[in-house]
Image (tube, rainbow, N blue to C red):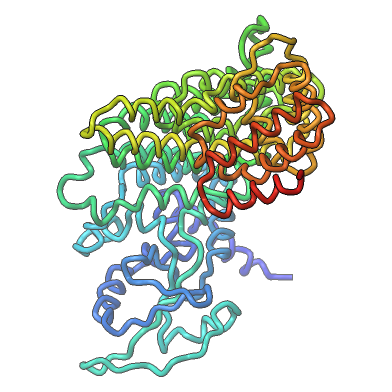
Length: 577
C-alpha cells in the first residue's frame, strides 16, 4: 500500500482543496468543472478567439445543422462534454456539502439565483469585453447551445467523442497567416445541463419563472436591446420543456402559476407580454408531465383533507393549474382557445376533467361564434365517459349542444343583409361568411367527436328519441343527427331515429326546411350523409317518413348550388323511380 509520505501528501492536497472551495460560488464551480467562460485566463482566450472570427468554421454535433456566432452559448473546455460537465458539477456540489464547506449548497444556489435574476438577456457586457467573468456571462448565453473550440493544438482531444467524428477540413490561413478554428456546437445548453443536477433544479426553475415577467415588462423595449434579446423568453420555455424528471413539482407549479398570473395582469396593455403569456400557456402541458402531476394532485388532496372539505368545492380548487387557467379564460375571453388546448393536454384525473367540462359547458352558453368550434371540440374529446357519473355528464353535454344556434346563425345573417342598405352589404356578407366558417369548424369537431365517442352518439340518439310527442325539437337536432350520421357505423341508428320521429310527428318538413335554409356552405361537409339519410327516409314504408325524405331532397337541391352536388341529388332520386 501507499507509504506514510504518500498519505500525508494526499491529506495535504485534500485540505488545500477544501480551503480553496471555502469561498467558491456558482462561477467557481462551473470553472472547476470545465466551463471555459470562467477558467483562468478565459478573458484572454476570448479576446484571442475574437481575432479569428472571420475564419471560424462552425459545425454542429447534429448532422446538417449550422449556427452563427450569435447563436452560441457558453464555451466548454475542449476535453469536456455536456454529460461530463453535469457529472462533475453533481460530484463537486456533493463533496462541498458533505464536507460542510457549503452546507446544502446554499452559497452556490444563492449565487446562481442572483445570476439568473440579475443576468437578464442583455449581451452588451459580452461585447464590451471588460467585465471579466461577469462580462462573459448572461442568461441568454446560458440558454443557448454550449460549444467548444477545436484547433490544431487541441483537436486530438475531440477524437474520444464519436459524435464529433467529422471529416477534418484543411486549416485556412487568414491575411495575417493565423490558422482558423472550428466551433463544435452541442445540442444542450448550460441551463439544460444544470436542470439535470437535482440539487440545482428547483432553485433554477423557480428563478427562471420569476424572471419571465421581468423580461416581458415594457421597459425592456427601451434602450434598443429588445431586438437582440426578444428570444430569451422562448429560449427559457424550450429549455424547461420535457424534463426527464422534476425534483419538486409543487414548487414548480407554484412558480408557474404565479408567472401566469403576473403576465395575465399586464397582457392587455402590452403585446410583448401577451405573446409571452400565450407561450407560457402552450408550454404548460409539456412541463407538467404525468409523474409531476401525480405529486401535485396528491398534495391538493391532502390539503382538502386538512380542511375537512365540505363537499361543495370543485375539484379544481385542489388543482392550482386548472383553476388558474379557468380564471384566465373568464378574465380574458380571448384566451379561451389556448386555455382549452392546455387543459385538454394536461394529465387530469376524471374528477378534474369533469370539473373542466362543467366549466366549458358554462362558457358554451355565452360564447361568441368564433369560440364555439374550440368549445365543442373540447367537450367532444374530453367529456368523461363510463361509470361514476360519466353517463350523466355525457347527457349534460348533449343537452347543452342541442341549445346551440345551429341552423339559425346564417339565416339570421342573411335577413340582416336584406334589411341593410347598399353601404352595409359588404359588411353583412363578411359577417355571414364568418358565421359560416365558424359553423363549418363546429360541424367538423362534432363529426369527429361522434365518430370516436360511441357514448356521446348513443346519448344523442336517446335524448332525441326520448323527447315526448309535441316536445320542441330545435334545428340543432337536425344538425347533430347529420354530424352523427357522418360516421358510417352510426348511420343506421340515425335513420331509425329519423323514421321514428317522422312517424310520431316530432320531425316535420317545416323543421327540415328551417334547419337547412341558407346553410348550404356550412353543411358542405355533411352533404354525403344528408343524401344517404334522404334516401333512407324515402324508402320508408311510412308515409310521413317518405314525405320527410322528399322534403330533405328538395332542400338539398335548393341549398347546394354546385352542379356536381345537384347532379348527385337528381341521380339519387332517379333510383326511386
